[in-house]
Amino acid sequence: MNTKPKGTYDILPEEVGKWQKLEDLIRKVCKLYNYQEIRTPIFESFDVFHRDQNDSSDMVTKETYDFLDRSDRKITLRPEGTAGVIRAYIENKLYVSNPVSKLYYLGPMFRYERPQKGRYRQFHQFGIEAIGSKSPLIDVETIALAKSILSGLGITDIKVKINSLGDSESRENYKKVLVNYFSNYQDCMCEDCKTRLQKNPLRILDCKIDRGQDFFIKAPKIKDYLNEESKNRFNEVLKALDGLNINYEVDDNLVRGLDYYSHTVFEIEANITELGNQNVLCAGGRYDSLVKDLGGPDTPGIGLAFGIERLLIATDLIGKKLNKLENNHVYLITLGPKAQLEGFKILNTLRLGGLRCEMDYLNGSLKSQFKKADNLNSLFTCILGDEELENFKINIKDNTTDVQETIGLYDVYKYVLNKLMANNKCAKCKESGDKNETND
Ligand code: ATP
Ligand code: MG
Image 1: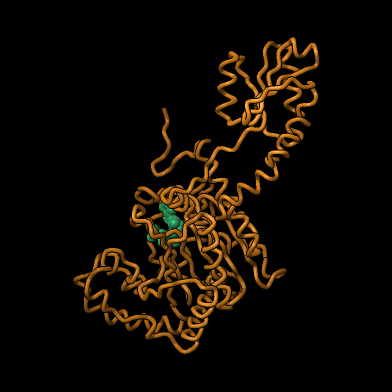
Image 2: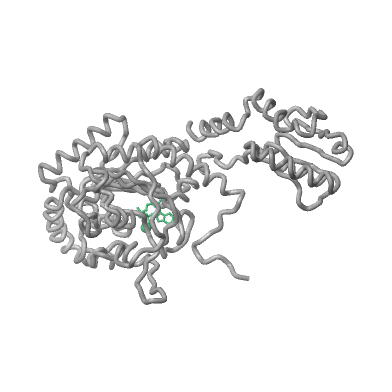
């Protein structure tokens, strides 16, 4: 028997409800902030992700799935969403119609990593990109959106870590200072950091191995090398965060994994011990040169990405239930072939009228059909036998009150709807009830 590839998993029907609820919440919040969905290919040309020889991030150097297609084109499965979205932004000239494009994506990403809880080879990300504005307010808006998603899930014990990498002048100055400083400590550095020292010294600060060492802690801080403009900009971001009452912690060592970031970078951590090293739920930053690097006009941008699996794990860990089985409206039990065919037609009409319905397709016993009705949390169970059929009648049981009545065969829809309205359980009310649930 074939089994699933390492680092992948199946989302089974009993799990998929919480994915859908989270996706609904994401779409709702994106609408509030005026972000529109964009869907780009799952594979792109190799160069979309491997454009910079000096990019030393693990994701680009060690984790991508690269292959040649049957015509020897170099292809990469997307490891993240931003590069593909920017490629599409440029190729479709989205900048012509909109000076600021606010886009979001949701879908699978691929990284060849060591699988563990919250870390997979095929995983899912939701991300946003705001392209076209330099305003510090838009940086803060992305963080506010992220917070809205988290509070929609009930995840409120979080830490927003933020830093500024400044403009390219500030970064170049700081890099020189860092190279000077770390050159004295090469003997104490891990192998990856030795390479980073040559290729991109900033990334040393991101190292999870050397982090605790004395020389690392005492390294020069970027805040002391930001030029006036970058400093002012960072202060404006912090002021706007204060304005929205968003708590944050400035983290001098936060540089983020990718090499294209400038000015604002941030991460949101959940304070949930069981998440261990996988407690970063969301990460983002400003990328003012990326659009140009990918061949587009000189356009600033900022984005963030959430790992969907980690969001779901975090939601589980705080005890929030997203996958409560929705009620089936009507389960139809039929006895005999004639009743089955007539019942099948009635069910179809109920569905056309917007009710969720099910019947038995296995010719099961009465007992097994009642059991199925129960398993589906059916609000009503209809029972139709040949005798009822001859009299154009049907039995219907309200499972919330256990009251059973015999009604006209073609009155089921009206009967159910009246009852649902009386109990405030019409399809619409039910929906808003669900939304409140994920919103508190
Ligand atoms: P980490 O340091 O945990 O490897 P990262 O810096 O590689 O994270 P990003 O590239 O910023 O992560 O991706 C954004 C988010 O996507 C992460 O915060 C995380 O929630 C999620 N994520 C990243 N890699 C994986 C993975 N292999 N499996 C599941 N989720 C992931
Ligand atoms: Mg990673």
